[in-house]
Length: 262
Image 1 (cartoon, rainbow, N blue to C red):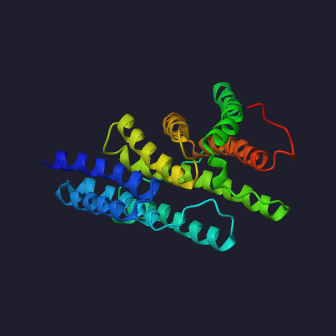
Image 2: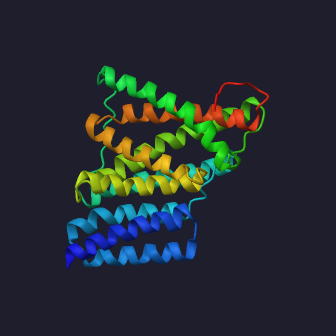
């Protein structure tokens, strides 16, 4: 019976992410969230102690004003709530569940091999070919405001990069760190990918772009498992985000420069 409710709670977690965060259907999303939390009552204490912190974080994301706005007050509020989501997972794992499942292994001094360096360059190339085309084809670039001026462009750059770092710290490190203690890695990675993609879908990656984001999320989880280096996967993410930033400017202001071929 415990195993049945364990899997039910995980299914409801994925549904909560899609409905509440991705699609922003608040009433149904919070109902799904509530059933997911209630299902934990029938799960083992060990499972419940860990998974409840992911649910709390999802509830927090459900009330977070997720958008690409670079208004400073919005960025501050959104930033504080997103930081709280990470803090809940970390502090809950460390001081409440006392499992220490959430740790931050940056491994700054780890030496990259040639394949890892090649992958970063490959990520840049793929992002260069895919982002301009996909953002234009889906109309997703309209979800970002790209206003002229050094201050506006700087805030856009900072916001884009900070969100990229947060994605890795929360989804790939914290959520996956908890899930993989209770599931085979492949299943844990598939579920964190759903949460990762739901957030970025709400953020602005609409249409079929969710398929690209989901694939990226799965790869990031796999690479983190292999390298145990948050620094490396953040570099990968920020490399893609740099191309995203340039593509957004190009799509909003095509007369400024001609950098892309797609």
